[in-house]
Amino acid sequence: MSVELKEIIKEENIVYRKTPALTGNVMHYCPGCSHGVVHKLIAEVVEEMGVRDKTIGVSPVGCSVLAYNYIDIDWTEAAHGRAPAVATGISRLHPGKFVFTYQGDGDLASIGTAEVMHACNRGENIVIIFVNNAIYGMTGGQMAPTTLVGQVTSTTPRGRDVKLNGFPMKITELLARLDGTGFVTRQAVHTPPAIRKAKNAIRKAFENTKKDKGTSFIEIVGTCSSGWKMTPVEANRWMVEKMFPEYPLGDIKDI
Amino acid sequence: MKGNEVIAEAAIRCGCDGYFGYPITPQSEIMETLMAREPWKETGMVVLQAESEIAAINMVYGAAACGKKAMTSSSSPGLSLKQEGLTYLAGAELPCLVVDVARGGPGLGTIQPAQSDYFQATRGGGHGDYHLLVLAPASVQEMNDFVALGFELAFKYRNPVMILADGVIGQMMEKVRLDDRVPRWSDEDIERISGEWALTGKKNERARHVVTSLELDSYKQEEFNHKLQAKYRRMETEDVRHEELSCDDADYIFVAYGSSARVCQKSVQLCREQGIKAGLFRPITLYPYPRLPLQALARRVKGFLAVEMSAGQMVDDVRLAVNATAPVEHFGRYGGVIPTPDEIVEALKKQIIKA
Ligand SMILES: Cc1ncc(C[n+]2csc(CCOP(=O)(O)OP(=O)(O)O)c2C)c(N)n1
Ligand code: SF4
Ligand SMILES: [Mg+2]
Image 1 (cartoon, rainbow over the protein chains, first blue to last red):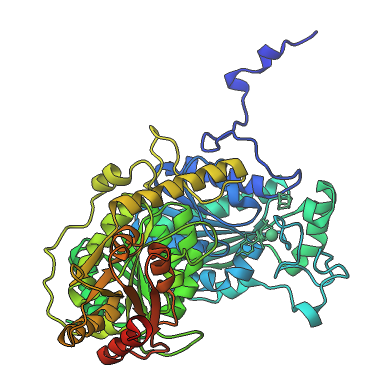
Image 2: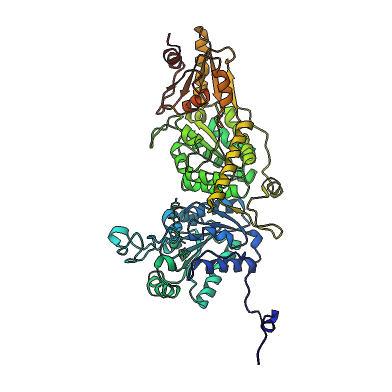
């Protein structure tokens, strides 16, 4: 017995649908990239909380610079590393809004270290989403502050050498030590359970904005299949085996 | 009142929404005055000490992106740091006000007054083809007047406006007539004035607003640059400002702005006492430069002396305007030294009159 397709595609059979807070623009990310999943989670949270008209995003310089093409809210793009300062300006003058930055590891943990430290130290009432893929994706795979010891990148062709380049920076732990942060967590988006947890964390961060609980900081350990020169499956495996021991998942601070 | 204090007072009175700054001599009184005045109690204006000039200008960027009246102030080394933010503001077409109370350089230089920031103020300063609209006050009264005017022009052009002062004007005490208080803009005002682009939260009935200076298509980026250039041409026709003192019958003209212009007023008087018909041409907008009125004078005078507290920056614009119609020379004291009226007169005699 054959089933007609149109008999299957019915309202009562739908178990998943794209949240209207995603624009529907085709994403420019490489196959296996974590950015798209993180975008989806933010869009879902904003939609489910019913705060799309009160949310303002600040996109970084990095592969996710064009995040504003995908989540259907008001956005501004910031100079490289400066998103937390830009978000400070927005949030101070729009106290009732949900203001978040979206930043990569080069943007946040290298060129923007001062801005993120001080925004967190002031306890700015913002959410910071930090996608750590241990590399500069956008510029073609150079070393990031979070690059692992021995990890091969285009500027560490023989692997990261601590004598030359220092150590992988655990900026999330550093920020958790600041009194201004209220919620600091590290998540990933490589499996359905991980995605659910990451979404809950994002939701909690946005809820914290309502309660003015200080800065909420969410690191997402992510993949950069292109920068790492791996297939998406290999990249996920490498992330679990190599990155998670260095960057363990879970809440670091929750007050 | 002191020039710096007047900037703070004028900001509160004109309904400024946010000031973000970082301490540096000789302008720290601006933030200090604001902090002492606590305008957040009175008007709701936000005042925040940032961790650096880079952060301060980016906070201004965020506030400006919301359609708010945002400002920062600094002095020369701090301005160097703000240049990144300024090119992004210009590229995203955001209005804001930046005050530079300039001091001598290069490097850490001196805390004494100088006019050696002319290039970084008028040439754009950061990367890309852009300009700030630059106002040069020569009195404490103009420090007051240019705050409200600066915001007006910033929103007229959706472009950063700079008040380029120097340590003399910032620290000088003069009588000043303050403006009447203007309330801060309401949400409805912002909707009316900047509703097409400001970040106010995406309502269902409108498309999302995106403030960015990124354009990956080079043809579109060129088109955007055409738009910017058209904006600068419009500034040149609608908002060039200058002032002339005793230029009508003058044979020789000092060209000077800011505190140099104040010194030159005295030099004009000294010249006249000695029978030399001198006048003063004072550019008030440094960008756009008052090229045409200067050109008109060039046809009938015997020479110009550009007087600056720098090794010769504005003189380039004088030469471009005069275009070899009359002799142009430069006299400068710099590194924090202020020229005396007498030495300016001597320079005129030696370099231009040559008799
Ligand atoms: C001032 C400045 N310096 C350098 C660059 C070049 N640049 C663009 S993106 C980037 C690094 C991005 O890496 P990351 O933040 O980790 O983001 P990813 O692409 O990996 O998501 C760099 C160095 C720039 N645009 N501006
Ligand atoms: S280069 Fe890396 S971070 Fe950038 S889109 Fe591709 S996979 Fe994602
Ligand atoms: Mg990265």
